[in-house]
Length: 121
Image: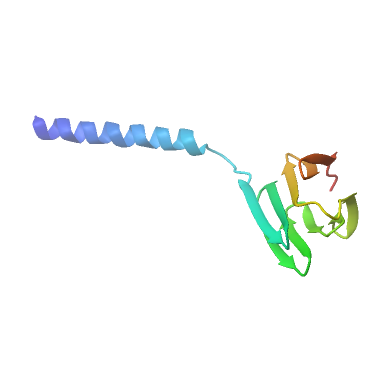
């Protein structure tokens, strides 16, 4: 009887773990998660928090962020999306933050909001 009880306990434990893991990770389709990125260009920190997969790199004085919405280039005095200027930046900004959540795109420089818009793709 002890052997059967251990088997039953083991089966119940596996079932409980399966339900717990499914509850934590969710079922169905996933949106690819969230990317939190950062780089330093000279004395400027560039941070990006975006839905889905993304990459950040630097090229000269620019930070380049590639994500599902396109290609962002953070230049010294502007942010461009796919070559089109989205917003001007103060040339002396020390911290530029970009957020892309559920289609809403925001840019801040040194804590000041410069842009909040829906991305139309």
